[in-house]
Amino acid sequence: MQLHRRTDRLPPLHEESDSVNSTMTPAELATLADDIEARAWVDYYDAAPPALRDALGIAHDRVADATVLLAPGVELALFNRAIGLGLRTPANEDSVAQVAAAFTAAGSRQWWLHVNAHAQPRDTALSLEAAGWWPAESANWVKMLRPAGVVDAGAVGAGEKTLRVAASTDADADAIVDAITRGFGLPPFFATWLCALHGRPRWQLYGVFDGATAVGGGALFLDGDRAWVGIGSMLESHRRRGGQRAVMARRINDATRAGVRWIATETGEPTNDVNPSLLNMQRCGFECVATRRNLLPPLAIRSSPGTTT
Image 1 (cartoon, rainbow, N blue to C red):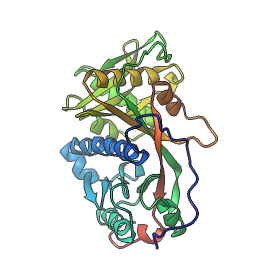
Image 2: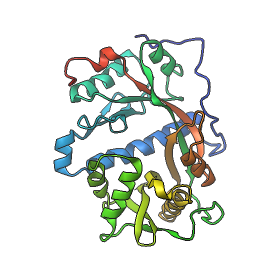
Image 3: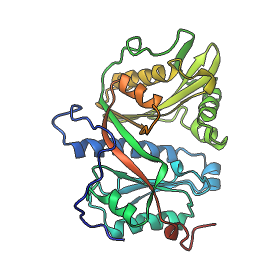
């Protein structure tokens, strides 16, 4: 595999904004958005209950300039991925091999290497794909960023009157994480892990309720002057009713009141279909600052010694 300069370039996958902050370069904004996500997920991994951590092999590491999230007991790339490679130091064969070796050593079989459009060299994704790496089913994510500021929930059409958003309490945290987990279609272990964020410093869980019943929710992570909003989902029965926009607006407003400067999130880039999550983000003032290619390693790497089969 050679990571060399090429004369062709990966075409833009999504229109990036240059209006979020004119004093920062596009590469700086992309790095900021990836950093916010990575720090949130590192703390989320640190929050994992010990028994779950041991059972699933939950860990994280810093390899080259990438944050590596490891959970080999979960055969889902969402929990096994590398964020930020090439954003501070140009990626090369050695750094890619180091990242791959971390997943191999952990025994992760399904994992992604995220390649930000602003990673250096700028043709890193093209070179990797030419070397046998291939895009995941969700081939691209869009990295979204916005400055702090209050969102008028009514103006963005956030939620029917029958739906309400509330911060989690001891009485309803279990119901909230159960609704979020079922909304994503994830295994039950995710609810146990997610519940560990209730009451954890810098985190706040939120539920979307229809009457007294939790039907969805999301999480907010505060980190100095930065915040991350994520892990948001709704039960199928309550989608397209504004609940996601309502919980997003609440998290943005709470982060703003907490004094942050920047708020980041991410979602899948739509191909032929509309992505409601992306529309909700845009309605709440988020702008795309980068796209990110989600690459799966060649079979030769995934079959390396040390990887369970």
